Length: 267
Image 1 (cartoon, rainbow, N blue to C red):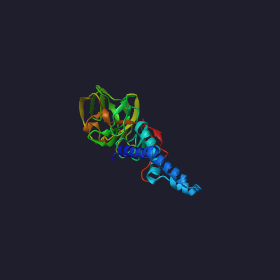
Image 2 (tube, rainbow, N blue to C red):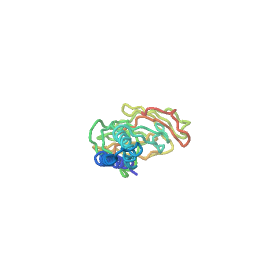
Image 3 (cartoon, one colour):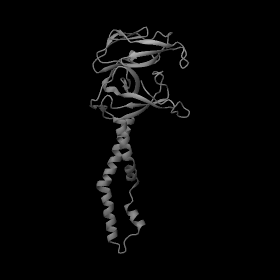
Image 4 (cartoon, helix red, strand yellow):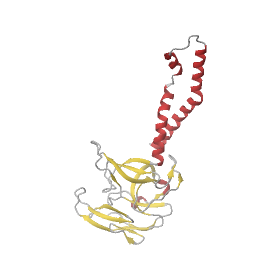
């Protein structure tokens, strides 16, 4: 289900109904009231007046919901959109049940539904945590880290990422983290972004020989390197599929009571 499409349709329907009322239906009600008053020598009491001017329920609902729906559409389409993390592919940066905020204008303004970029404001940078529509199934949103930009040469083998022939620096923090038994916790320096990743020493993982990222595309990986379905398996993310940059966790909910103790910025 495309929520953006449903929201656009709801705004359009309520807006049209409200506009019809302003232009045509409301003046007709006033004319009817004036005609009734003109034919009544003693005028109308307040109850009769209210009855004559009463709005039909579709108009009442449209007038109430249109401004709210319009504001939600504008905020969600051009400023900030909330998402929930459904899988552990971005651990330890993002946990299952984290509710995140995504900056929708960081990479340019896009129209809802068509996703056409109408204003260029920036481009994804190496190290960004990016939300995008899955290339082979655009109705599904993915979140991964951008590791390579257009024109970069990428290689990944023996759990080491290489960009343009240079190994991406990383160092071991913990061989037995309590939050992920069996994984190694490492600190990786990707461009100007320092972030943590998991590696499983018993899992050989995929191998990517040297490939060049095409123009208008990005190479992405999950921080949970051996438990992530990412560009190592299905290829590049086209620019037109980019949704925005994740910048904050505002709530965590794992089925119990929502928790706001883990509010943080995303690095």
